Length: 97
Image 1 (spheres, helix red, strand yellow):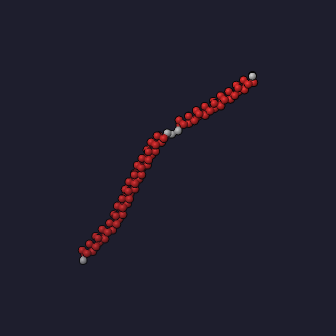
Image 2: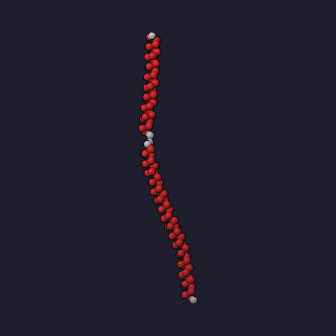
Image 3: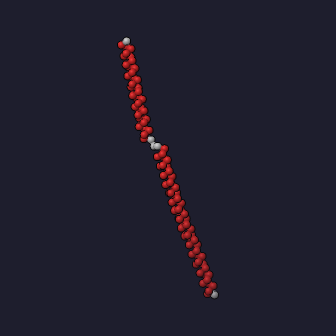
């Protein structure tokens, strides 16, 4: 009878230790889950990042467009100056005769 009670006490102690380990594991999972990023926070942050990306893309496109327009203006000016000089030379040559 005494051996049986000892065995029961040992089994209860082992079971209690096992449940303590399980509870500790559960607490660890709970703590870890509390630190995870929630879906709502992720969606808000992702929306903000997409908006900023779109703004930057728009700024880059605008900047590239201005640069292309400025480049085209210089090309037109570079072509117009010799043409005007040619017209002036022709007019002067015709006026001498």
